[in-house]
Length: 247
Image (cartoon, rainbow, N blue to C red):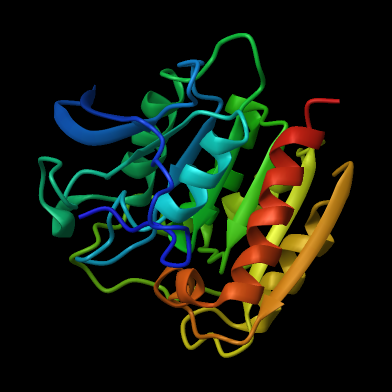
């Protein structure tokens, strides 16, 4: 079930959404396009995090707001999650990177994209920078993993998120020349604070950098929709990031 802004007026119309499937390396990935009223092609894609309950719907409160302000988007589920095919225990970070690139091919070809990434999805967003050349990155509670983790199956013993010097995420973000928004959790039980510092310090070529630190744990999208003031701050920052990065 989609998650929408719980404080929005009851009469407010939700942006039109279209469910679809995309295909990547033999897997069928469930996706949703969230359209602007004029049906513009999406220029924003969300990459979700790790976990059995990870879903493309958790960020609809963000994407609905962007659609209401002129930006269509795409959100999808990696193989092994939600309505997508595949087994979570058999997938890898490299496979998810390839699925991210497949999803990005559905975006507007006339604009550099905006990548939204949550937790592991933030690692993947940064890792794809050399390929996708995004104009903006919005990273929520971003995790980072060492290069050696790229082909380790999720069902095997894996490294925990950390500020690994050889992380492909840090290598990617060093090449990033757009606008960066990092939304961090003040009580993150999954990602150490040093990872947030590393993302910001490695973004040496970014045109702008902004950090918002929230009074929540790692699962920001469960907490934020019901927090009126903090949600308003994040929505405003994200809206400005997506719009201003077109300049």
